[in-house]
Image (cartoon, rainbow, N blue to C red; front, side, top):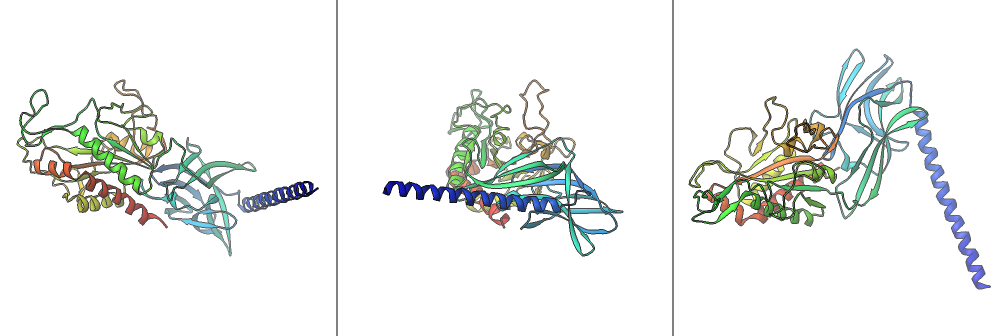
Length: 426
């Protein structure tokens, strides 16, 4: 008898839970549909470009306002929340064009969005009231998926979709708590060169290697090995800060392709990483190990804000006791460099250009049979790439600092990224 009463009580409890869940679902769907019904679909703007580069999303678009509408704003909104999005707005005779930023690594910081479902809309004043209207996608690109960086062992997943509501297109951001899938990472590190490509080979005493790439006096060092050991150390430091990190190769003898799905220039995007850090060491080809050129160089893409690059420079130089580079060619600020192809727009280094997809003018489409295709060359959802030349290993003094202070260089890089991310959070 007692068992029957217990079963009956449990059954009532289950029914009550079902009722609560159903009521909650109906309530939130009612609120959602109520908000969507209030949007004015007689008006609309267009999105002519959009992408995610690193942790930022950018839009370019246009719209027209009637004379009775004014003070347009770009907002992410739902029935109970509204966030105004900064933009650069131009108006000519009520024909508006806009960009969320002039920089590829600026715009909507996806790390800062709150849980929930939101719609990207234009908000304008009509007399004493506000109206909202949607933006139509005119690009070849459709839905996007984004995982936020790991914080306290958790993440958010953002599904950005072009949805239909009563035959009207509306851009939706759906943000939920999650953890990263096994094949998704926060940060990718590429140790430059590999087991088949040593890069520069130097002798510890500044002498020149012989024809077999060995040093007659002094120890022999391959740039590819130095890059790998530094990348390993950086991975450890970033993981201490809680980030999930992927190396493009796992040993000094590994060989990897440049492109394909898991190449040095593609692993970041295959694994949905937000940042790609390429580790390199420089040389000036001056014999005797007494080169007058030395120091740190951080290479960045065009149309970039330098906030993260500056943070790298500040923290690496402080932690590793290294100076900014004395090299003047391609220098834009102390320690910060940009090198372009002949058009002065396209980044010269593929580790910046090809990682960034459309944001950085990637172009390796497989037509050159020397290379596999970069499957992300026209992607609008890519990692933000940096190439770090940590010093000149054919300078004897700098080589010694690099070999003896891998942990300090790693701490500087990791701290530079972490401080930047904390400064950009709400």
